[in-house]
Length: 163
Image (cartoon, rainbow, N blue to C red; front, top):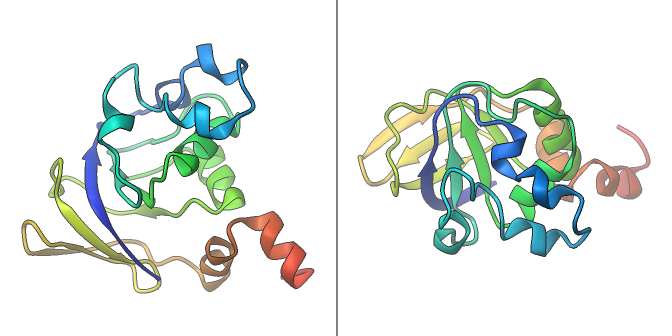
């Protein structure tokens, strides 16, 4: 599974209310509409500058805060190809896997805003084409790759019935 896109860089402790503000979480069930508001409290033009397949790149503890599934759903429906971070809040990580949003734990300091990245999810390799640097991510287990390919856990179970 090879992903390509540009890096959109954020810092540490990006909580679920930064990802999608609480003022939108309960106003709509339309995920495409919700997606238009991701990260707007800290980067008002984020959605406008996002191209399908682009990556969110952050520091430690990405997705901390509430356990509501709207945050990873909004990220996925905005067209983000994957989220790269030094670490993830456990519940955000689980929710992202459940909906089929790829996450990679890796060192992100060398990645800069706007860098062109190619990510091989199976091998856990991130090639920063802008800086000509190869970074390694924690490899994802085969079952997680199959869940991502299926579009999430529910789709995987519908297709396969079990693990």
